[in-house]
Length: 438
Image 1 (cartoon, rainbow, N blue to C red):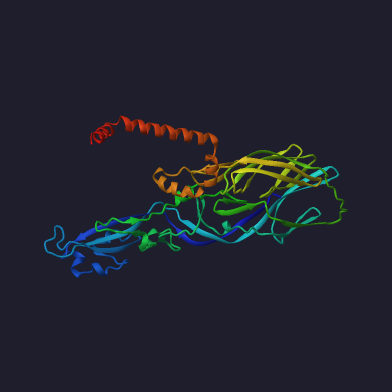
Image 2 (image 1 turned 90 degrees about the vertical axis):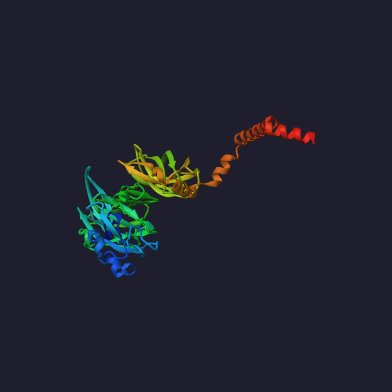
């Protein structure tokens, strides 16, 4: 069995479009255009204003702001100038995205089965669904019971597009397109998309680029978070886990059953433990050897329990584990039919990461990915990264006799330089002569 696979039964919350927010404005003197009717203070956001008609075909809102001067610039008569302006959205792409949730999931277990009879071996592959019986030869196989994964990540929101799937939290778009998202002009732009507008009609506005969200390696699928693997197949959202118990019932007709158990032990050879702690996971590489045949071993460590595939030639594999400290030195047990063997898991994990990380698996090889981020956001990155610093670890690194010795010598050298500077300073010499004379 390759583990439990679950497929999201998607429920579309809304349809999304990437957009850019723009502002166009027109100034009118007190006696010109719409200003004649003194409508500046009574403009409705969905109203088509004569001065803004050129841009009213796009999703947007109309506004008016009165000038502060008693006599408008280049106006023939005194009075308040009106600034009519339209805040509207223009599309960044033609693709329509879906914001979906997964209220329910479908469970399936992929099975590979082999039947050896009189030296002849037959293999088959099939999918097991809860309560559904699969017939093969004289066998009836039923997925009797399983434990659904209790992972909050499965309750997340997802953005689904032709170019990929991204996981988001509490996502909100200022552009509501309803079910007619392909017709961009039918969308409605939220009035709160722009804030802090000044008299020169410059505003702080929000744009939305879904393409950048889907390209973000911290959000785009595939993702390995703790013991849950999120995947996408086209527009489908899938999840995999190998850490949940399942019960399979096998019924055999016209056969006599004899139990054959390989009484032998498993041995785990650790290769490398790397990555970070208090993050999305560290990668533990290991090799598992079994004297005869193939078997699935149960591996118990101090804070993690996982399984490993073992064979006579040895199976090199990896698992993503969770830790809450930097220095790892744990004694683990490997449980197989003939008893228990032990090994030590050792390694030093990162206690400070410059960026948030993600476990990326390409061609079966896992790696820790760090996003360098945009240089224009370095201040925000530093503030965010302060939360990831393990100050206890830093203190223990500082409390080292070599570092203390260097700091002590630096203070002595600095003190000597300051005294020498004061003695040779013309200001100090002049002050000394004046004080001696007095």
